[in-house]
Length: 82
Length: 303
Image (cartoon, rainbow over all chains, first blue to last red; front, side):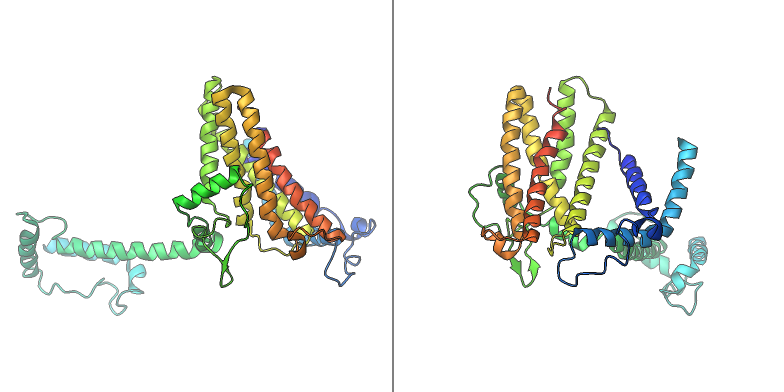
């Protein structure tokens, strides 16, 4: 129960890393979560699965490069301060 | 007087780049339009003025013309820096939007606190608008504000320290731990609510700050519960917490119903369809998460 802001930051970094390592063609297409399978339904209800797929794709696109920097900083900090 | 004049000039020469662009750019080495024509003649005039206005026989700080110039320089530099900071800060923290949430007065706070513990008599839960912008909380009791959540959070930490002190478990570090724990739970709750709002594609005008405000309203119930627990023991704590949990549940449902559900469903008509059902479930789970958090964050304080 003793959460600190730092543990929250660590948890967020781990989750975003987990989303970023999902490979598009090796994994996501195999389970039906690929990019090409999300462009369906032009109605006003995309549905939860399509929203999730869009979210995964956008997180991977946006957070690729900043994650490199954030992970490097985190590794250095953990090496120095444990 | 001559050495003071050269001292000011050397100070001015150290900062030519900051001043030459704003002041007269023709002569960067000279800061201001120099009004002291003769160093010998002017100071006596200022001396006389100083004696007349302040009654000090010698040269005081404010009557010295060079320090007048230095004060003017410093104040204009300070206002420049303030403008720069304001412009840059507004990019990260929307300060003007935050000001709306703190536009409260005593009557609003009193009524809102009463509404948080007894929401059963209130009839009209709609937020009133004024030409497409929401009215300030001062004039509309249904508008969310950030004053009560902020004060509630701080009071919760203080009451937690008090409660731990009565059990001889108090150390100063615990206050910081409680504060960061509660803050972390608040951030996680707001993030989860934002994620679920995105997934269900609800077209709502709830902003992130609104969600923070709604999540912060449960601190009021928590404080009342813990104080009752301190005064009346565990029975009082459980009874008051039960009452406050039910009140917050009803309050959240009635407030969120108007914002999240479609028009027809908000009137109470049973609208079928998977999407409306999903929205109803979302509202119920947001409201149900509040009592859970209220119990989770306070049960260790009352033994």
